[in-house]
Each structure stands twice: as C-alpha cells, then as structure tokens.
Image (cartoon, rainbow, N blue to C red):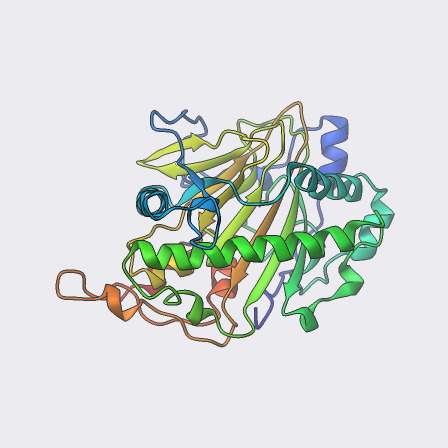
Length: 358
C-alpha cells in the first residue's frame, strides 16, 4: 500500500471492545449494522457445500498428482472460483501441528495485558500494527474485533518494531508460516491460469518482483448483541488471493452467494482460500471475488489468521488479454494500488469493484 487512510477525529468511545465484552455491556450504536448493509443476519447451511479442493493434486510436481487427477481437480477449482469465489483447501502440505502452533501464538499474543499489546499499536494514520480498524468517518459502522496487521514481504519492508516479541516464538512461527503459504499461493496462481487454458504465469506475472504479502491476526471477543453487531462487516478483499486459517472450534465466517449468507464450516486443518477483487479484475470477471463477513458470538471468543498477497502498489494490473474477445469484452480498466483503494472503500461502506468497471 502506497499510502495510509487518513483517520478522522472522532470522540473516543467510553469503553473499549474488550471492556464491553468482559462486562457484558450493551454495544453503542456505532457498532450496529445499518439497514442498507447486506442483509439478513440469519444464515443458511449450503445445500451444495462450499467446495473442497486438494492442493496436492494441482501441482504436477507432486508425487500424489496424476494427469487425470490434476485435470479433474483443475475443473473443480474453476467451478469453485466461478461460482463461490472461495473453497476449503486440503492437501496443502502444512502439518496440523504447525497450524495449531500458528493459532497458539496468536492466542497467546491476544491474551497479553493491554499495556503489553499496546507496545505494538498501529499509528493513528497507519494500517500496520495492533488495534481496532482505523476510523475514517463518524458514520462508519465499527467491527467488534481487534487485529494485528503485519507485512511479511518484501522482507526489507517489514516493520519489526510491530512484530511481537512475546510470545517469544511469534516471529519465527509467522516467518515460517508466511513461507509455507507463499508456496500454496504460487501453486494456485498457476492452477487458476491452467484452468482457463492460459500460460501458467498469466496471473502471477502481474504481481511484480516485489509483490506484497501481509498477515492479519483477527481476535473476535464475545458480544452480548450478536443480532446487531458483526465481528467483521461485509466486504471483499483487495488482494489477489487470501488464505485464512480459521478457529479450530468456533464458526463465524460467512460467504454471500445467491442473495444468501452461507456458513463456512470449520474443517480443523483445512485452509479457506478466497479470491480478492484483483483476481476478479485479472480474470475479466470469470472468477468471483467472495463477499464475506464474520458474525459475532455471545458466548465464545474466536481467532483467525488471514494471509493476503497483492501486486507491487505501483504496478498496473488488468484483465489478461487471452480472456478478452468479442463474446466476452473487457469488463475492467487497468488499476494500480488497488488494495489501498479497496480498504478505504471497505471502511466507508462502498463497493470498490464498481469503480474499476469500464
């Protein structure tokens, strides 16, 4: 991101989310969903479950992959991304024990005293670091959550003063997790291109040599009014791909499809992959960017860990030429620094993809 949103001066809330959660206090109106938000609050279990894709079958270098199995899985991938814009990834090569370790360091950090966590607070005009979402407007609907956002790549852009030293394994675990997820993303970029009969680097080449990779640890506290308040309001990601490690026991993520909200069930050692807006643009609208939200829970806390990749901020991206023809004309203009623009729109409750349409 080349810039940072400019936070507006809004009177501070009388109590923090943590204090309200611990005391069971009624959330103030700033947290209540507006009537024009994507409704309804209730959700549905899908009749056709959110697709499950075996990543090991997508890589021709995998010993588990055969030509027939790879082709079948590529078609499943294409179907998932044209209809849902997301899927549950298994066979990703990351051990269950290591995924548990990633969750654990996140839990340990959020369990620290407030004063300790505040050592890593984001700047008022910044995005990276610990805290609640930046507030850009007095009319902004606030999320019932805390987050820790950190940049992993390019490595020379890491702000290590914001990387927790407690728990003492945090930095090492995050660095290793980022490396492992990057391998998965690279496989997916090639597989997505192949599923559309494109050269395998058709998408990945648009990200540049210094593509951005960021992680966000999300912490959702119990909320006394889950009927009115969301942990994370409806949005699509500004990334190319987002890889999410869900809480192992508590559901919360929901995806919007066919004018309904669908619960994303917890598969303990699967990773949820959803496409961001930039993949919808690059695929000329063939693949969908998943609109999703996180509901709050009146009894239990929840943690998740999201990993995003984005093109170099100043690198222009656009629909792949091979996906534009008379039958399917170009739907989107070329854009750059889209992730930052998407984030601003999210905070203001706007739909960023609309602005990229021709």
